Image (cartoon, rainbow, N blue to C red):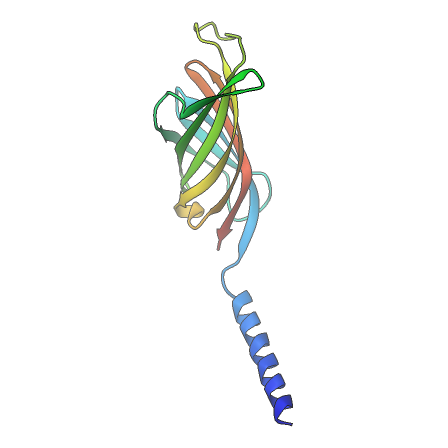
Length: 165
């Protein structure tokens, strides 16, 4: 009979701890997009692509990268690829979101805007490093795409963010 009482007590304790844990803050994974005009203006919009805790937000977009020179250059199947890393900061009306990105740029051999420099495209990955306001406690990241036309530089970041509420 003593073993039977121990099993009942353990079961009751497990049920209590499970219900207390589930009563805490919840985290919901939400798909988002950040559409940025990096140069010349430094503006961006965060758009939820699925319902959740984060709401649409707009604000400034700025970055810290080591230099305009790539971190390193590699040759892949005969194509020159420039690898860059950067830390970006989106400062919106709803808070600040800071994330780290690694991207790879290739020259497309065209000067569509006639500024004397060949245009480039890039793809990359990004990961959140800090958030305040509605982005406080945010975790996650995703993939990115860039279009660089000399002094005009656009990017789109898509991925999943988890925010505790």
